[in-house]
Length: 249
Ligand code: IPE
Ligand code: IPE
Ligand code: MG
Image (tube, rainbow, N blue to C red; front, side):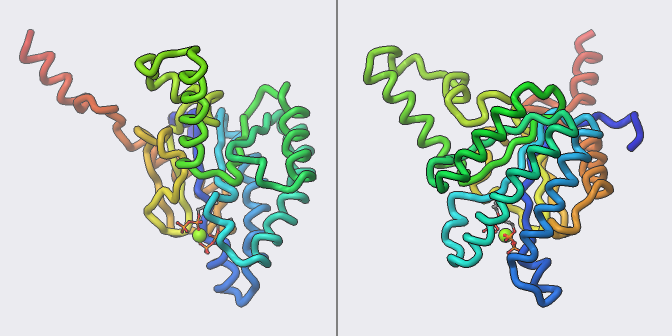
């Protein structure tokens, strides 16, 4: 990747298409998830090398519990394995791992593994790799509203003190900036309950590539596309600004 490109500070990914990848090969869906985990591992290394500061990957949504028992349990088995692998990858690449979502719904050993991953990598200063598991943006917002309502109930704050900053500070993502770029693999043009609050001004990039086939070249393509965007945050285009400045001279 050419150094003329601006590297987005925070890249969020909706990894999708594991099941379709497996189906195309006549394999069970779980094989797609297994390949998908390898892609996550590779993407963490690529993101760290490219100088991305935050990488947030959607691993399991609050709605994914609807899948059949066999698929959910295959995903849990993969989590168990990759939690241990990630510890090694994080150490080798100076990566800090954080988790967003409601971890309390997982079994004890997975909760312990996630806690351990966070604790043992807390001092790493490179990429922050954020895994969204049992994550749903509406559930995250509901939990945040409950916390704020409790503060009001106790008289710690007044209802009128609720600002956007206060809401953001009660979300799971309070420790990081909003995503600059959101990548979704597997063609679908939807958010599927991912980072609804945080993606207010995020640039979207959707690719037909299925997640197990995603690689560094595809990540670079997304970053190149990001570099062609003009972010306005509700303002006027930069060219419009220049024209206005001229006419008021
Ligand atoms: C994404 O791949 C992984 C998870 C949601 C855990 P899918 O399993 O949704 O794959 P498709 O969309 O069915 O191909
Ligand atoms: C989004 O993918 C969730 C994750 C990647 C974990 P889904 O496959 O669950 O999304 P939908 O059902 O196509 O919207
Ligand atoms: Mg899917």
